[in-house]
Structures are given as C-alpha cells and as structure tokens.
Figure 1 (spheres, rainbow, N blue to C red):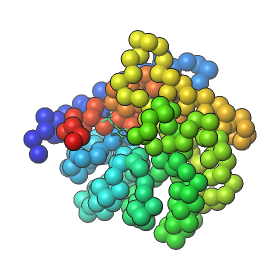
Figure 2: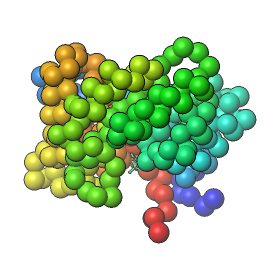
Figure 3: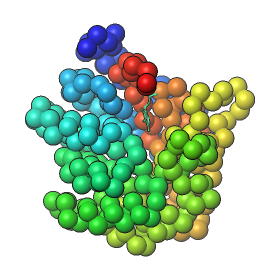
Length: 253
Ligand SMILES: *Cc1c(COP(=O)(O)O)cnc(C)c1O
C-alpha cells in the first residue's frame, strides 16, 4: 500500500497531535458543559492491521470501523488478538439485520454507536443474549440524523427521546451510553457553532430531563478529522477521528 502516512513515526505523530488538539479544545470548552475528558476513537476503516497495531502500541485503545465485514475480519485477526488484548471496537456504520450476528461476534466489540430504530434495538438485544460470553450488557448509542440528510442514518432529533426510552425500558440487555451524530460535512464554523452539534446537545438535554438521567452519564459522540476540536468545544465526549491519525483514505467512488 503506497500511503504517505504508513510509517510508525507518522502514526505516533498523528496520534500525539490529535491528543494535544483534544486537550486544547477541552480547555476552551464552556464551563457549563459536563467536564468529561473526551474519548478518542481512532477510525481505522480501510487501513491495514499493521497500522492499528502501531496505534495500539502507542497507547490507543478505542478503534472505530463502519463496515461489519471489515470489523469482523480485523477483530478476528490473530495478530490483533495477540497484540491488542485491550482493544475496544466501536461499530459506527449502518448495521443491517443480516449482519447483526457477525458484528456482535467480533472479539473486543465495545459499543454499537448507530442504533437508529426500535427494530434494530430489539434485534440487537435478542441476539446479544445468545452470543455474549458473560452477563455484560451491550453498550449502544442512539444515532441522530441532525443534518436531516437522506443519505445519513439516524432518528430525527424529535424522536431521540422516544428511542432512548424504548431502549432503557424494553431492551434490558442493552446499556444506553449516549447519542451519536455525523452532521453535515465541511460546515463553515466562521458562520458560528455547527447547528448539527448544537442539535445533539439539545437532544441530550431533553433525553436527560424527560427520562431523569444524569446528564454527565449521557455521552455525545460527534466530531471527525475536520471538526473534532469544534465538536469538543460544544460538548462532544467522544470524537471519531480517522484520516488525521492514519492519513487520507482514497476518495469514495
Ligand atoms: C469515517 C468516519 C469517521 C472518521 O472520518 P475522518 O474524516 O477520517 O476523521 C467518523 N465517523 C464515521 C461515522 C465515519 O464513517
């Protein structure tokens, strides 16, 4: 693979730079927001196992993948299993019903961030009980389509509380961890705060008030390579960063 960013020094450099930028953004974050240290999810889609191992050896533990087949393949990779014992995988893509078992069977799966319907929540709950190897619940986030784009997955912001309530009351083997959004790409922040991120912050307010949850316990997963600092300033507690760590991906066709 001829990628400019494939040598070890670069991965370390990329990670360190992003972690320093996260710290800087935390310092600028409004003091009325929950003072949670943001979690960095290194999004490794399309990138080879060797780079994941390098990032792991540099201290990174949370990794994100958005294709089930790729997640399952990497999670089962013997080198990953041997060298990355504490790896925590985040599934961040669209999850089709026929791929649920494959996703849930991935060793080291930590969370499914993209639950966007009662049907998916029910199916995950049912299959998790059959597949899991301990009594642990499956961590999930509810995905919200804050930018109202048809191509993006997620419930409408007005439906977020209903879906969270459903998960908490009906899906007893799922553990609700927070809300996730992608939002519009390339938003120009000179126009002010990204309205999609503000929308997710507002969803959290509503979810925690209506369902009586401690706001500090409801995570917000938002922000990618181009906007994670901005997202943190607005309250992100999880950022999903790929190319800024691993180098650019080839454009989608
Ligand atoms: C690819 C992807 C990311 C990371 O994108 P970068 O721009 O490379 O940081 C984050 N979240 C989701 C859902 C993705 O699919």
